[in-house]
Image: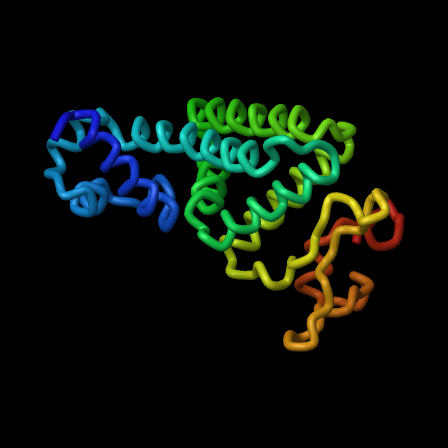
Length: 216
């Protein structure tokens, strides 16, 4: 087996491990074991764990972008958007790529990881704009909902967010929110912060509750 083939096996193994535990929670020993190689050989292919993580951040965004481009091929506007929604929904069900994206966001306090994540997100945004031809505001909304669904995937809450769409069938922007489901408990009603217990109200700025700028 060539070094490039080993490298590919390591990337596939690392994707599973990093998606589950992130950069700092994943031991390189576990990646090497899953890839069927020794830990020293792993570091011959990737000098540091961060180098491996960065390679996967770039690959993750590239793969998500490619999946959406394939789904939207030959379509534009709402048709392309609906095709991409379906494809992204399948990615969320598979979980691995969306979870890797979440860990990339979480690790973006590191300058190198932040730069790679920003570049990947920018390419994804540009691709969605080009594929759909939709106005920037609708593209931003679509991306926002995609990130929301990514977070829901990480928390196993996908069912709460079923039905979120970029636009309605009539082409009008819809209100983002959970779709009521009879088989699931209702979301808690929105409450006035002033009715919260004291430990919580101390965490809320006075102006957010009453508009008063004085000390609580």
